[in-house]
Image 1 (cartoon, rainbow over the protein chains, first blue to last red):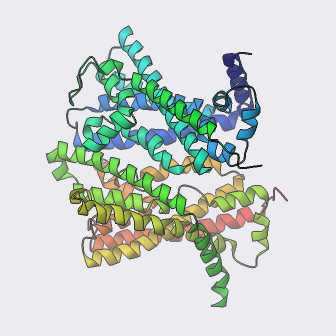
Image 2: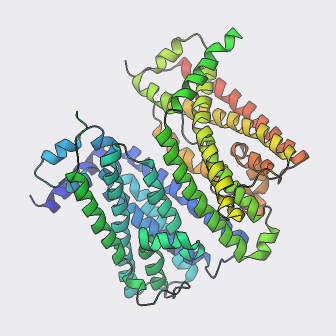
Amino acid sequence: MNALALLGRYFAASMRSQMQYPASALMLTVGQLASTAIEIVSIWALFDRFGAIKGWELGEVMFFYAFVGVSFAFADFLTRGFDVFGSDFVRTGAFDRLLLRPRSAALQLVGHDFRISRFGRFFQAAIVLAVATQMLHFVWTPQAIALALWTVAGGVALFSALFVLQAVLAFWTVESLEAVNALTYGGVYAGQLPISLYARWLRTFLIFIVPLACVAYFPVLAILGRSDPLGAPDEFLPVAPLAGFIFLGLSLLAWRFGVSKYTSTGS
Amino acid sequence: MDALRPYAAAFSSRFLLMMQYRAAALAGFFTQCWFGAVHVMVLAAFYLGAPEAAAASPISLSQAVTYTWLAQGLLAVMPWVGDPEIADGVRTGAISYDRLRPVDPYALWYVRAAGWMTARLAPRVALMILAAGIVLPLIGQGQWAWRPPASLSAALLFALSEALAIALACAIIMLINIVVVATLNARGVNILMQPLVIVFTGNLLPLALYPDNLRTFLFVQPFAGTLDIPNRIYFGALAGQMAWVGIGLQLFWITTLVTLGRWWLGRVMARLEVQGG
């Protein structure tokens, strides 16, 4: 069986098991929708009180917010195995079993679990995008749609890479490390707003170290047809999501290194 | 005093146990610094971008900044999850031991929740004061720092109000615990509470910054007493009589929620089915 067919099997098994409790799956999805929707409440309240900031209006900020949300939802859906890697695989020694099977460990971790509830965040972000489209009277040309798909692909790669890096750390820390949440969830939070609002050190961090701005801020500017107030060249904007794939490649190299250094914790 | 001894023991054993998790406290601290910094920058962008609206705002930028650091430092007080020990007890059946003890179950769980909360609170708040209150001004970023209380009387009133905030948060956690015992599952209620708590305590955004026509509602609802009221007393936005109104509201909600919790726990315990063995 090739890798794709195997993933299909994993996927089907995961869906079947969650659908044994349809009410629970539905409630978790709705819960996730509600808990991720609150962040937009604060953005809305701030705009209501202060009006537009530094040339951004609410509709535009909602575009950034929605793209980060959609990308993160997909990445979270695909990388659950890496997310729980420290506590469920390294600490328990279950990773030994994965290594014995004649398939790559990364593939098996992707297939470990696909949580239906992650669609809560996806729906929430999609609703925000629809509302923002209305507010800005934005017209989705084929070109804009293609760019949007490319942006989401880059975003999924980047957020997946963060989960992979979290798993790599677990080779040394044994536990899943809460501090990485500052990067994943904190990154989502920081990426939801235009980075021109932030201080220089945080902008530098979001462009060059963990290139979140390259999968949200820059390409969304291109989709909106605006040029960057910070002065990035217009030709760069649509190419930026490539950084997400480069980051994913680097994180997979780190993963390979981590696996080669792995020593089992025992039973 | 003998009557109180088991509760004091339950509190201190839980406190000492939680103090062992130093790595968790440190990890939580870094996350809070990050979120705090991003929050502060966003607030600053809005305030500085619209000077007129900022002048009309019920709290100033430096107050909102202090509010943000307080909210991050006091994160452990937020009542968004039930006590995990009780959720475990419900699943494993260990809860039946608690039923056998000759103590009041509400009081026992309440003091345990208080021990759990204060032990997570103490190290984080200390680290946060160090980072946002001392290091930030020292490196020349004083405008983004955690400021000291408005006055000595504000500081004293804040101490009282924060103690009440902890008591109130424990009363809310007890209600979550009771739902967990009644439904035998912690996940649903925890997911439901999280957005409510983040919005209505003021953790997401100071309550004063929401639209003005919601102000009265946001002030009298119970979650305000766990964060927003003590914070506003701290920087003097609630002073004099209004500070006492805030403290009175906290007392009112503590009494109401504890009474409700005791009555409800009694009913749930009367027909508790023990699951495991």
